[in-house]
Length: 178
Image 1 (cartoon, rainbow, N blue to C red):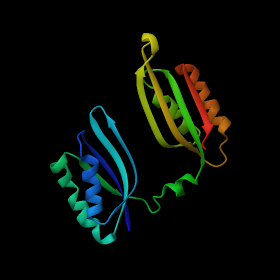
Image 2 (image 1 turned 90 degrees about the horizontal axis):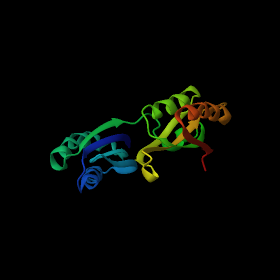
Image 3 (image 1 turned 90 degrees about the vertical axis):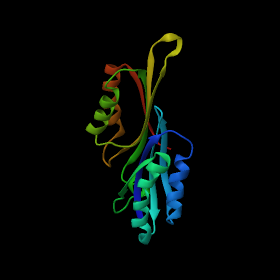
């Protein structure tokens, strides 16, 4: 079996996921993992699939037809030697990060720079903006799953985040993942 990571994007409409799932299934593949989202009228997804070695070429050749059939542009990249989530999760200590504050430019950059300075890896990040209660402008919220490398103390990461939290005027939480 060969593992591929697919990235897909298209104008939102019914049947996009079904068309991609059918292409995987028609080539004997297995849909292993995925993250799918709708943003600003666009469907976007990233999918990990496993394909029988003998079906890889036919599967890759079939992907461009999805753009014509349903408007879904799909790119495929071969996964690394060990693309399993479990292997990567074992390489660090997992934490959850939550952020809430007034929306302004540069927030994601500041938080991710602080995490990078401590050697943290971001496994997942979801962010969104919403109206603040009582006409208080826009709020920015983010949740992330991060991993700290062995030997890095959570207190150092917490300190780096607290320094920027005051500058950004946001509430930041960093908790051990369950």
